[in-house]
Image (cartoon, rainbow, N blue to C red; front, side, top):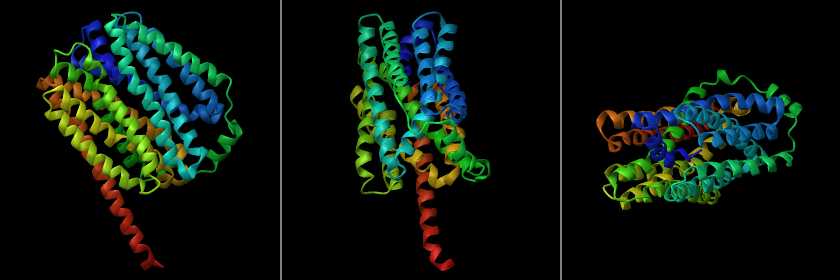
Length: 371
């Protein structure tokens, strides 16, 4: 789903959109994905992980093929279908990965999200090639074809255990997640994280295109440095988690992301834009997998039920914050000001992890005095 960032200048020119209008496309993508995530848990309970992922992939095939044709209204519909399908598959894929080996879930989730990063990193290069050939629809049809191959592979695969009885039984034994005081806090954390990650990745190509307008097509591949550093960061985090606590890695990453965001805001050339994108990507790389792996620690037996509202909150952030970036850019006359939004997001997440770590240490220190 990261293709929309490098495609924004192309779609904006095709439909004559302002920054605010382009931001509305990202909003549409993530809002529809939110509804898909709310449905995902229900589908897993009734149909199992395998069929849930197949349904999501089929919707993404349809949406990608539809986006290649038609006017703005058809484009919005296709983005809705794409987002809905993506929303169905994301919680199912992440939770299934975490359940395979709960003891090493943080490392496993970093690896699986690193594999996802390969697609995110390569898509801008494919878009740049298609744009150079003046045939951007090639990328859309090619991606639809690749998703069709994935769909066929899923059709002949097996997930075990993956029965309705197994999932429903384990869900029935867990307490209500809505009673947890942590739910609104963690929902806000995912809201800020996804919104921050998407704001950087979704707008960096447009930002580079404006800062260095002489570059004809290189601006289109700038997101690849961002998503590529996310890929590298998650690969390194999977190794680092063997030696350091997850929260320590998260805090160090957010400090790095803060430097990356400041570099982007102060950039006046393509070199600093690339440097800022790399630092931001490396810093944010481990935050999502680590946060997902900590769901059982935060919610106990209610983690699976909590995943619905938590992942949905993340997509609300992915819908809202990039739109806010575009609206601020339109109002104040530049994306340099708009990038303050994800910078504030990084600061907020760093504050959360620092304070939650301190609170955990205080509780641990107080425990012997209570026994």
